[in-house]
Image 1: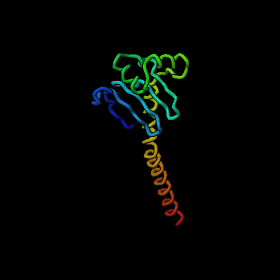
Image 2: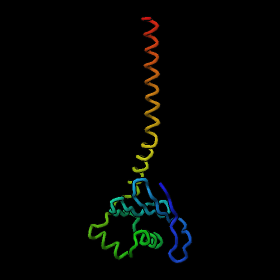
Image 3: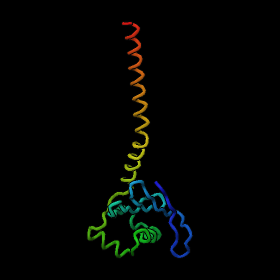
Image 4: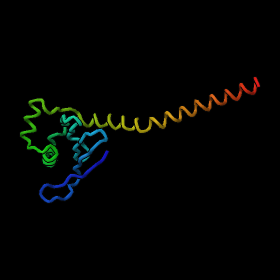
Length: 132
């Protein structure tokens, strides 16, 4: 994932502990401290963490900046069903697990194939020794 530190609209300076993340699939995320707050999927669907979306004034300020709207609009979109409340942090844990599996799967598969080929080679050598 690519991570960009958010900046203050007033000063233009980077803001501590407020991040915008981009995965390789076109999804954007807003993270405040260690909690995932919002996700805009590659299809434009917006998901908000049901536990942290309105956690504090600072989180709200940068969530508004991320979504480019005020809290009243966000609440209206939640009520209308346009925004979906889910446990984004649990989803991110699952996503990171899948990302790690995908990253290491090719390595594990290659190691397994190498072991199988080594076994076949030994068996072939044994047959040649016995049968000539």
